[in-house]
Image 1 (cartoon, helix red, strand yellow):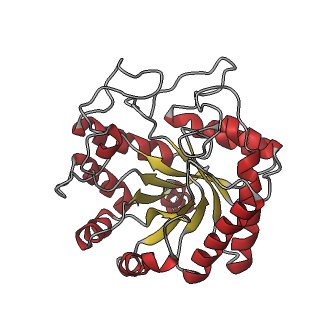
Image 2: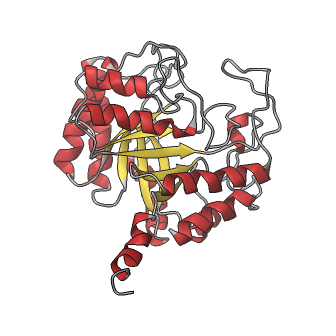
Length: 328
């Protein structure tokens, strides 16, 4: 028995899995902060727009989150329809990033630079995200000065490549071709793809044999690209994962009008459980965040990804997330 003891003691550490988090929409109510605390979430991911926000806009939210034991994480974004491409625009965005970093120095879990910059919906002018071509050069021209500026303020706060649509390994390849190596601490991916109703354990293969970008397990392809470029020690942050519970028919992408846009609440919970069980076995995903904490009133499919309903009631997926977070 003595010989087995060190192995048994090591098992919980090996199976710990990624740090759990949740995407939140502002304003975050006191009731939602209480639910975050109850859920066991370690991180709350939120957006900060250089075109309309100031650091002080987040003071109260950051204070209440930290008091609840939840670290805020900011996605720094500008205007998706007019992303910063000129020197003046890039300087303005970097100035905003620096102001956020100085104001919250040592108080945040990290900064993502933009969101889904591989897709024209978030970076106007990008090639279609479901095509074969990628152009990371405009993004890298923003990433480099933002990374340098943020690291000068607080070197230990992670600066992360903004969450990519699906597991967009082609964009990561383009990022390295454009000289992005050395200007990020982790790469963020999103697996809550539009009209995604498949299990996190299912996948398809691309024509070249790689795991399909729009499937959950394809984060492995992202890390393979990182490893080929000497960044194997760096990790992936899955900053959005989830399934909508909408009853709508898919209204976007190649499957528009051809399949449901969401799953039942019971299946959502089963998929959340399966996703974290899958990630618990992974050694390359450091953080995993469910999109989103609560449904929003509206009617679009993306309004119904929440762990909570619009009225604050818990969906079964809330208990599934809590079970992972509390037993990690």
